[in-house]
Length: 592
Picture (cartoon, rainbow, N blue to C red):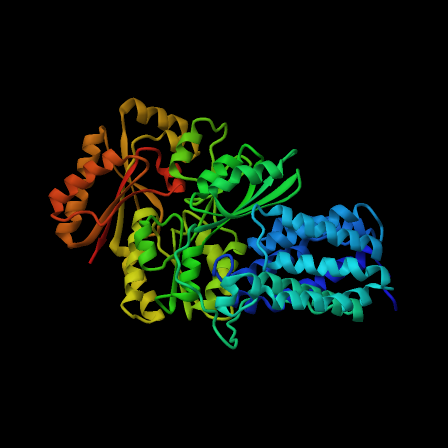
């Protein structure tokens, strides 16, 4: 039966079929991903985009309504350069199709032309030899021959070879592809999409929807990737909602933040993609343009290490509440997943898209105290799926399960992963003491211990860690609802300085108190000294909530008492700072 027009149902199923073909090939698309950076996630990003369309898109009898839903869900679910370019292409289709009930061949010709234009417009610096080139050459072929075609089967069948040939030529246009002996991953994804769509148009049979899973694949060769350092570390994406978002203005203002800039969407909803070294500065600026609904930050250095230069067969994962200096995270290639911090309707990723400076500055103006939440199972699925492609096993060590649902969600995601072994450990700690446990886990992996030996060692490290927090004010705990207002008033009147620690179950407990900052510090130093006398300390660290001077005092006195310097000193996670309060200092220790 000839298909000379597309109803809403046919249009939706065409996208499902095309998306399923992309998802089926995601592992190989990840494998050949070298541009704009070789972070090995193009296939996964495209799979996420189509998965969102399939799960949340609404099929209507109207082609226009259906296409609007597809475009909307594509923008919400889009990830990475290619995913957002696809989403903008779909937005252009929707814009051109409008409210029509059926899509004719003539309208389709106009729509793919406009869709290609919108895809190019989304990028501040369009690059040929990418998915853009294949989209353009295919849409030009559609424009040339659509008037001579009788139905969509003939149109797609007669133009798909143009897209395939354009794909083969991408290495001629982009040297990095030529050097790696691969075609552009996003462009190949687009050809897979067209191929899957054509198969459905020919047969009217939908494939079984491909699962979003990862698997290790073998291809004829590994892409040859250069060792040039990345100019920008973080692939950052922000979903904005507003009423009059000026996409062109955003595109202009954001150029200073990095490269690979894409601003896609509409005045009501826009997605920003950029490679940058300053995600928190970026989101601070974007607050003025709309509500920060969703964010994603990928550490491209860590991704590149996993794909091309991993040190170990075991991937070590922790969360953003783990306070370890960046140099140690880098040395041992430790993967971190961020918790979320929300100021009203604006949502941020702990340590990544909001800094400690910004949190404490925003607190005074916040009408409602900010809230926090654990990473979603989707975030864990995405991370574990990526790691499953490149490691033999995964060990995750998280903050106390009594303080957050992170450990529970991590276990859920691990249980859904069939490819490799994943062990998820409740550290019963947080902040610096979690950092010392994770560091010892990393050292165990570095020493060559097996997966089971590392897990057993981490369980042994947990009771050897201690955490003594000098709380300077209960104001923040009162505002956050953790301490009653009456207790807050009394502590202020009495100048009470609590000392907080963790019990064996991983719960926060009052460990002591003093009535001045000096005596509070002396008590903690005595506690640490007694610990060392009872059983020699392997190491200790000092972490703080924006109190470098007081932390320095602790370091000087502890070094004089113990005869060794702290392993490190650093500002704590903004989320931990919200709980401990501005000015808090924590001494964390690890026994031999």
